[in-house]
Image (tube, rainbow over all chains, first blue to last red; front, side, top):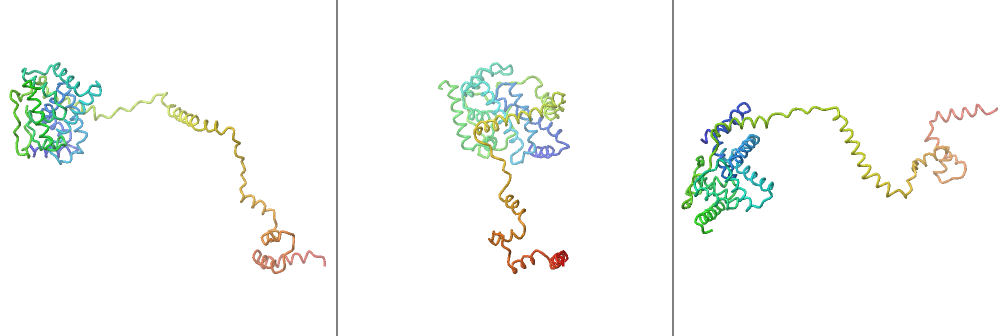
Length: 182
Length: 162
C-alpha cells in the first residue's frame, strides 16, 4: 500500500493526472476517514459534511504535502483537525460548555437514523462521551482502530508518553462508567 | 471497520487494554450505497469549489459608486480634520502672505544700487565718496576687459568738446 501511496502522490503532483489521482485517493481512503470522523462527530450527516470538507482541504493543500509523513497519516491529521474544528464551531454556535456539548452529542447520536447497536454498545458510547475531548480522540483511535502510538503521535502532534497516559486514564474512566462505579 | 493501514507500532506493542464487556464494534451504520456514491458527490463538490466565479455584470447604478465613495472620503476627512482645526484656530489671525524672504529683499535692494555705490557699501564707505584710483582700477580690471575700458574712454573723449 505504501508503494502505491508513493505512486499516487507522484500522480497527484502531475498536473495532467491530478484529477484522476484524486478520485482514486477518495475511493481508496473515504471509508477509513469516514469512520474516523464518525467516531468524533457521531452523527452521520455531520460526518458526511466533515468528510467532504476534509477531501476539499486535501485537494487545496496537495502542494503542501512534503512526504515527511505517510500519505495516510497526513490525511488522518487533516480529518482529525476538520472534525475538531466542526465540534468547536458547533460549540460556539450553540454557546454550550464542553459538558453540555457531551449532552448535545448524545442527543444527536440518539436521534441519528444511522445509529443502532446493542444496549452495551450504546452504554459504551455514552461512557466515551463523558471523556474530555483529547482523551476521547485517543481512546477511539486506540480502542477501535488500534492505531499505533507512534503514528497517533504524528497525527495528534503529542508525545507517545502523553498519549499512553491519556489512553490509560480514558480506559479506566470508561471501565468505571460501565461497571457503574463512576 | 477497523483501520488496518497502520504500520507497526514503534512503541513495541499493539496491545490495547481490554475493557470487560465493551465491544470493539461501533454501533453506527451508513445509508445504503453511501460509499459507492460518495466519490461522485465529492467530484461534484470539487467542481463547484474550483469553478471560476462568473464575472459580475455591472449595472448603470454601479458606475458612480467609486466617485461617490471618493467624495464621501473627502467629506469625512474635511469633517474630521479640517473643520475642527478651523474651529480651534478661528480666533488666531491668519499668517500674512509675506512672500518676500530676506534674500529677496537684499536682491531688490541691490538691483537699484549702481556698481559704484555697491562697492562702497562693501567697503563700508556708505557715503558718496569717490574711490581712489587704485581701487577703481582693481574694480575695473575685475569687471571689464581692456577693450571695453579703452572703448569707453575713447567714446568719452570723442564726446568732449575740443
